[in-house]
Amino acid sequence: MHEWISDSGHTPHLVVDAGVTGVDVPRQFVKDGKIVLNVSWSATAQLKLGNDAVTFSGRFGGASMMVFVPVNAVLAIYARETGQGMIFSDDEPAPSGAEPPGEKPEPPKGPPKGPRPVGGGGRAKLKVVK
Image 1: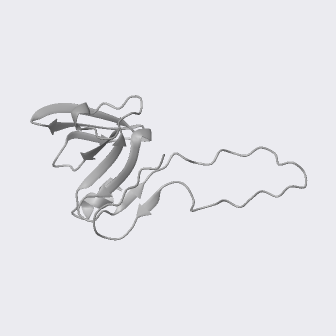
Image 2: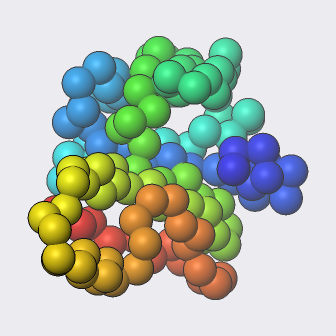
């Protein structure tokens, strides 16, 4: 997603849950337990997008700081200019055990869980789900 947003000439932003263990971000910019980080190549130094974490050096209020974000703390990635991107969910259904004989499982309710595209143009419409 980062590459697609950057290649499209837009600015990638991450929404991060700052309460997840291991997250190292400037706490003075955390609001409601979340922080939005500009992860464009021009706004970061030493940006590494790994399978386990996103790390980079960035400037916050004029001071340089190393940022460390475990991937499980990333809630969304989107293009600032269009609001298009993906929201990530950790609400994956738990594997079900054996069903009692003669009972049919109920069909899932609501939309499928997991990564899903953020629609249309305009501003990002991210909703906090607890």
